Length: 278
Image (cartoon, rainbow, N blue to C red):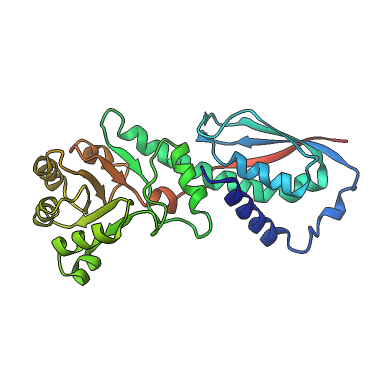
């Protein structure tokens, strides 16, 4: 999960861009008014982002009491009340949009991930994310992927080596680049991307343990699995959709990475409604 400091930083930044010098509409509400509000999910979704929502209201007003009726990773039905909030009405209204923004975005990622995980159920392929994330929200989005049942790829450029076409070309070939990577990579994982069965054979000959099959056809993936025969973990990437992901998983690849999990999402429909005012 994203660490507490990352959650706090993301929420502080989000509140700063929304509230700025102050909530100009807050004066419409009596300062002493308190309220009971509920957050409702409007269609079936995988919930994610409760810690970010909690942090929004904690930073705004610690008098707000938050009670969740579902946890991150839970599949919630449409028109379900997922949260009750009680506290100063002004603070509830000031934090409403920021809290919902986090919940809608992270729940969308978790929900989309769950659809892919379900699609490959019964195979041994894992669904992975990529570095195609919104700037400033990488740890949050990657956490959402795990809430949906997926697996995180490397977090950034610092915790894993991924050798791509340009790296191979610049370094002087597959053999040379793998040797250099092992010499400088330390203990972090080393993965190499290949674009053909010939490159796959070169990578395996040179001891590659993690190989990414870039835009391989189904037939070539099947051949790649047979050629590899367990000597390395194979990851499929490129052109993955909900329509073809199961067929890809059935080729026998170990991992399937999908950039759209964190990049092409539709926000979950959530709303906050006041139930009573005091």
